[in-house]
Length: 504
Image (cartoon, rainbow, N blue to C red):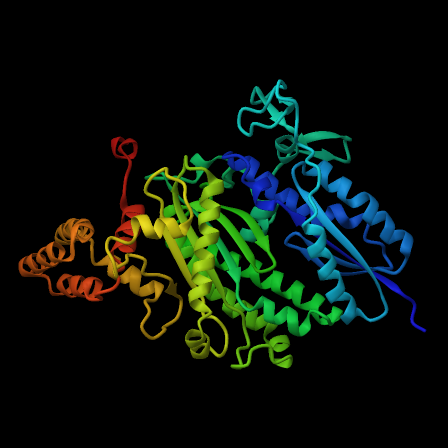
């Protein structure tokens, strides 16, 4: 009779709140590296040599223990270690004793879901009269002499790490994610953006990007109960995502002529599994995401194509993965947490559109790669549905919500390239005049369709440039929606210059 083993599972909770607790870029990056350490180096001391690692990435751990005592030690001590190294993070864990791995996986997931709904006591609460961090509002536990600033426990851990050799604390270098994302070993401090001012250039627009893979649910259903295949798949998926991020960086670096000595205007926040979260300069965001999405299809086919085909994952015969992305364009002073929340909502909107039966049928049974974006125009914080209702719906039966924009050709939908090509026509003196008229047309759409039609008729009468006339007809020809809002938003992000930069 086969000896019983122990399938251990852990899931990290509150990751986004922990990472985006402040608007300090160095703290955000320090937090993201801490989260990555939880699944890797932090769990190493509990991962017994005679056990087997199934999954250790993106805030999730699945590990097979052969001995009960080893498993008990992990259950007893790992949550305490996590909450000490990353105050504010909580962790759910469950264990299933098994001889049949396939049945154990379903039971483990069920138990983890139950555990997630059980609240844990916060380790960051304090008395009302206690001294607090000026940036997070949490109880201060230490004083950063370099910055002359009182820090809460979580921020302290984000900035400092234990030096096991010297047995003391040192400033967290926050280089690991950059080295992985840019594929640059021993990257120089001079190339890394430690403050948001290092990212902005001619204007204050930055982009918060969130990308997520499609079809992972179907894959887990098909191969998640085979420990060897699933473990192999997870490692190869991680490799495909990292290589896609590497390719996106190289492409943007060449296109934007970023030299080897200047600060890289991209700061990775999450990179692993099928997830990518990045903060970067606003004008490079679309190019970066487009290359990432295209490369993710190619790299996933290269590394995962055989597994996908062998297990007949997608009924239409797809042999790769795709991804969708959301981009929130915000001012550098805007709260990052709301920027991330919007980027995640935009990614979900893109996925919803891409997963339609019609689009999946046209893409071999898999949702096609696409992106959505929005430029935050004011400081009013709301969810994307409210933004659509308040900003993008000027009148009944008409909307300026035109996305998502697709990586590859799709009947009736715009590609990202088509959007960029149309925007490029707005350059020059006559292009500037067209932009002004289109802004007026958008305003008139809020007052009534007839006034907007008259404005459009007048614009077409005075235009002499055939390409621009064709552009106007293209972007205003649909009686139900228009991409004009997106076009003008992207144009301004790429071309707007602050007065400070003009004076230079």
